[in-house]
Amino acid sequence: MSGPSRFRWHGFWRRTQAMLIKEFIQLKRDRVSFVMIVMVPLIQLLLFGYAINTTPRNMPIT
Image (cartoon, rainbow, N blue to C red; front, top):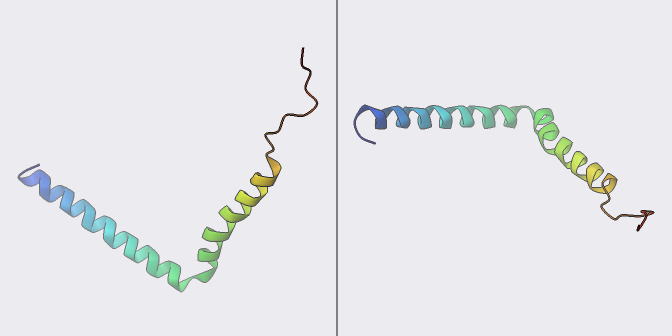
C-alpha cells in the first residue's frame, strides 16, 4: 500500500483504538456492565457444559 491508501488505513486504526479506549473507560465506570459481560458467558458455559452430554446411551445396535 502506498500513497493515500496507506493514510486511510492509518486513520481506521486510530479511530478503532480511540473507540476501544473509550469503551474500556466506560466499562471501568460501569461495574454492572463489566460483570454482565464476564458472568453471563461463564454461566452459559457452565450450563451448556453440564447439559450437553455426548455419551450415547440406550441406543439399538442393529
